[in-house]
Image (cartoon, rainbow, N blue to C red; front, side):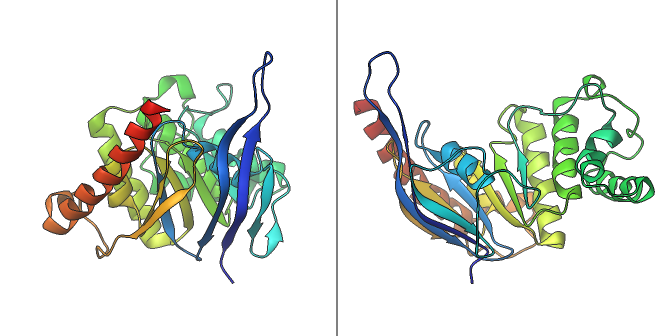
Length: 260
């Protein structure tokens, strides 16, 4: 059985101010294997984030269903960890307290909370910042905290919605390497939404390409590049060939979106 099954999921939003309804997502199906790392790539407004929010249980599909380990997704749950583009940390909590938040809500003993937080803060390179507040951190450090918080809860699947979109290019590149190295050792199941073609190839075992709105999956492209993947792989002929193919796929959809 697949880890995650997206079965003919569609989403139509009702009209506002007398306007007609908007079909954001056509009925879409996708199967995600255990430990897979899938990037979802597409032009702006194609329904990438809508699909991720439905998987997270933050939105309800108009049609279809989502199954995680065979059980239907009916709302948010600790079995899915979500990381957003914006830094969704609690500003009144320290870094460690943010990472421990989900564990505390589940009733995990405090000593175990601290142990888990110490492990994940070490994995994301934030040792020594346990007692800092979010306002004292850079954007990259805040996002590392958010990733540590999501992983500390031991989710079955990690969902990331353009998590590095607000970062400068150099920090973004370093964050890609960090997350990929964590995946290479922890082998979590990951769905990662992005509009960046290079990022989608570097991170993924499969790139799912979505069409212009109303979105649907138009291509499911495997990335046959071995792990571990150093940043230098981005200049390899194999990487360049995949980038050229996906650039053409996205260009066609971006042009369609402009005409629509």
